[in-house]
Length: 265
Image (cartoon, rainbow, N blue to C red):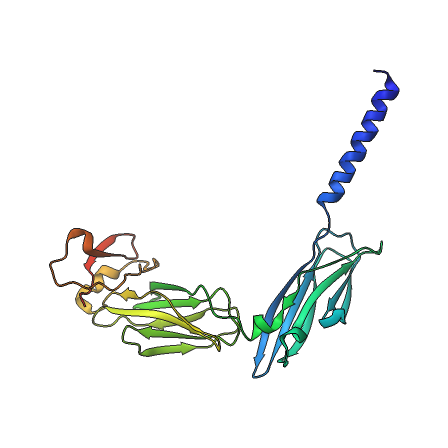
């Protein structure tokens, strides 16, 4: 093949690569929100729009129902655009739909997915409640620190530390998106506790967790950094002698694993 033919193939190959590259970097716009403040019938929300693959400057528009533009911002870098809104509860969920639109200087624009704020802020059940029980000693003696948080759910969310008998020992309503943090002293006997998360839609509980006793004659078992989480043990019902396999296990701060009988109920 002669030189002109080779040049032609090279140009075609470069052209094909350029088109493929264009297809790969088609801008995508994301939309996200963060609740800043909760009111009885309203929420103050920060909505963020971001098209990291689009060439700046980028004009971001926050649009509402029927494509009505709510706010606009021009960003000259690859940073996202943020919009601070006060959203009030409307009679129809459709009136609380928002999306982002990103437009470049070429005139091309792309829209994000729709964000249904009514379902996010007023009618989303709490889900995936996580509870972490940790024994720590910060110098004044061992304490059990508990962290409770759901992955999603409409605010406000109330967290409670609940005993096996259903008694609420502590309660918090942290800022949306933040965990509830409880701290208790180990009691004279082993106790079962669980986290509870509740909003206007539903209630969810974590598994029961056994908190070992903290009376003086056993306190030496808990000396050390005491930074390891206490393993969750489920209630055990028994009318016969417990076998080796039926013994509960918990971990203490120095990494040693100790066995204790699960409470027969």
